[in-house]
Length: 331
Image 1 (cartoon, rainbow, N blue to C red):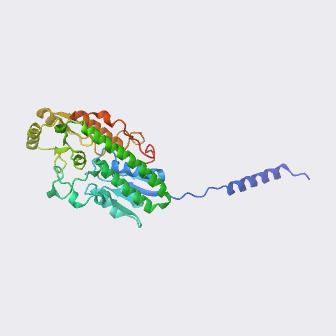
Image 2: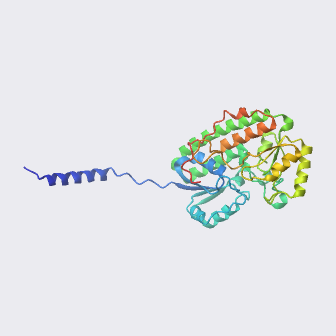
């Protein structure tokens, strides 16, 4: 029997549509919405979560996390978050207030610092005097505390997204191995620095928890508690302290550039090193070296070179992110 060509064409079209309908992909489940504040925290979360979540970092790299004010648009991001990771210890006041005001039903705010140390372990020091009421919040510059943060992140991600529990555990295990290697390298590098030179005098008071862990003494911090520049009287006192303390170098901050530090170094006769960082990750987002571990490796190289140690002892540390470059992170 003859079948007109148009009928063949119609039958073929119907068959094609039926085939496409039969192979239609199932809709993908929406990923967990996760928000973190400062760059090191965002990076720690990424190392555990990988691309299994939609991760947003609120505080841009290089911004002053103590004084950074969120934009109104950040309220929309926080309102959709299932998990909000905040350092706490009064570091990100603006983010904390906005997160509390916009938290959705079922959402959770996680204060990492308060979960890692007890109040009796708080450090009150030069830029964070006890009478001001807020402890030094820079726990993450101590890699052991950073690993404790990562463990909490793994637990919270697993509780909210149990379907990816194995992936979170695997990422955590690899991150822990890299932190252990970082810790060993820091110990070896510190041992190469003459004992009398293991002294830290910084502009921003960021290494209060790192120092006792690895046998350094923090002699002081130049930046006053209100994060202003020191007065002329304070500068004179700092210069005298440096001369008496036998400090080989003073360390500035990429986040807090200050001409005063250079002046203090010149007048005290000590080297001024400006590249120490507590939250500005190396490179740019997506670069292989844009990671928390890379930041700490560069910090130790900087310290060792300025204090008479061997910076090459940090060379063997794996600095990349466990899931690969952080191109998927909104930051």
